[in-house]
Image (cartoon, rainbow, N blue to C red; front, side, top):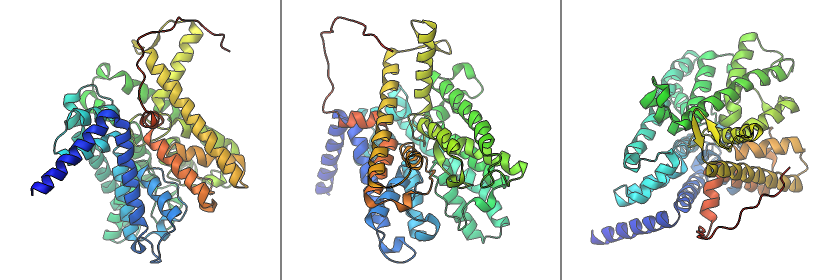
Length: 457
C-alpha cells in the first residue's frame, strides 16, 4: 500500500512539475498518449472485420483522426472496422472532443486526487476563464454539457433509425455513435450505405446541422450562454464575437455553396428543393468543422472546393470540438484591418477595446496555420502525382480537423498518411499551444529598444 502511495506521489509531483514549467507540454503528452493507446487498440485483430491486424499507418491515421475529431479516413469506417473498432473510435471521439487542456487537467486530477493551481491554470486556458476557483466546476460542466447534447441527439435519432427498419439494438448503437460523431464534429459515419440515402431526411439532417453548430461554437460560449442566455448584455466579448462570426460564415456558406452547385448534376442538380435546402444547411456548418458528408465532395466543382478551403481554414470556436485558426482569430484580424483603415488608435468591438497582444496572437496563429498548410501541401505534391486543388483541399481539411475529402487519403503512400496524421494532431492541439510546448523558455526583457516604424505595404 505504501509503495502504491509513493508511486502516486511521484506521479503527482511529475505532473505538477511539467504543468508548472510548461502546461502546453503536458497537454501534448496527454494527447499523444491517448493517440498511441487508441492506435494500439485499433492494431488488434479484433478491431477489424477481417480479423487481421490493420497496417500501422492506417491504425495511427485513424486513431489520430478520431482523437483529433477530424474524420479523415484511409479505409472505409463502416466496413473495415469491427464493432470493437467502432467502440474504440467512439470513445476516442468523445475523449478528444473534451479538449487538450481539459484532458491534461483531468489527468492531473486523476493522479493527484485534487485539482491544484497548475491543473486549474491548464483548464482555465482551455475554457477561457479567468476565475481559477471555478475550474473544478467548469470541468464538470463541460462533461455534463457534452453528455447532455450527445444523449439528446441519440434520443432524436433512435426513433428515426427504427422507422427505417433497423432493430432496436442496432438503432440505439447507430444513433449513439452518430450523436458522438455529430457533437464532437468528428465526421465518422458507420451506417452501411452512409448518409447519401438520407439526403432529404430532415429528421436526420437537422440534428446533424444543429448538433454540429453546438459543438463548434465552443465550451466557453456554451457555459456563458447557460448563465446569461436571456441577458445578452452580460455576454462576454468572446461569446459575442464567436456567435456573430460563426453564424455569419454559416449564413454565407448556406447561400454560396448551393448557388455554386445548384446546376451540378452530380450534386445539387438532381435534388428537390427541400433536399437542396437541407443539404445547404448541413454544408453551411459541416464545411467548417464536422465533415459529415451527405453528398460526395469529390463530385463538387473546383470553385466550391476553393470556397470550402477558406471555411475549413477558419474552423470553429475557441476551445470547441472544431479546429482551424478559430472564428475569433478571424474576427480580431478583420477588426484590426477596419481600425487601420479608419485610422483608429484602438481596436474596438461591442464597446470593448481589444489589447494589442491579442492581435499579435491572432496574427501568429493565422501565419503558423498557413505555414503548416503550405509545408504539408508542398510535401504531398512532391511525393505524389495528385493535383494541387485536391491536395490543398485535404491538407486544409486535416489542419482544420474537418474530415471532408476529395477521396485521395485512401490512395496516399504511407509517407503521405504520416504527413496528414501530423497535421491533424497539430491542428487539433492548436498552433499556439504547439508553439508554446516546443519553446525552450520564455524571454523576459527588462530593457526595451527605441521605437522606429518600418515602411509596410
